[in-house]
Length: 220
Image (cartoon, rainbow, N blue to C red; front, side, top):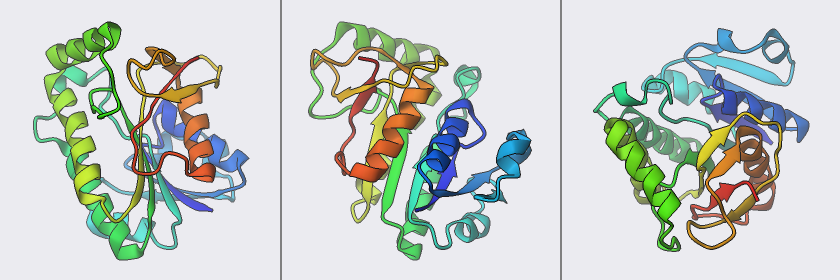
């Protein structure tokens, strides 16, 4: 496949690139600052770099030419969470992405989310409730944007094959094991590695087991 990766310069995005290449896909990176990527990635002949902002419709449209699927690691910066814009910039970016996907006939979207995006299959979990409440309290604008991402994908992506990959607290361990389910189901937890997020995303791209669903992916 030829996949477009958003949020590619962050830690999770870099792992998405590596997993996609390991799965023999070709990659288009759309990023504001692609120079942040390693020379190894930038010089890889299987990688095409496209520079642009998330609200630059012509540039994003050009990057979406001949794309089979979009893998997104877009999310609020953890370090800047309390200072996140109140204008829901990421949700607006997804609205544009979905519009252009329809224009270019791209059907598959796998997008990073969190348990702040709720699902009807979720059950109560005290640990997860405390985590989400903490995010809402300490980084309200970021929380609001993430919730709006879920609403945007579900409402505007009706014609798409989307999956919202909800992740809990993330770590940088190289352990890529994961379990998939929903909040409070007795098997999912509150931690996942970024490597696990990337591994699940590429597995789901191949298997299409969670289309139009928002599973929670965590460490076993």
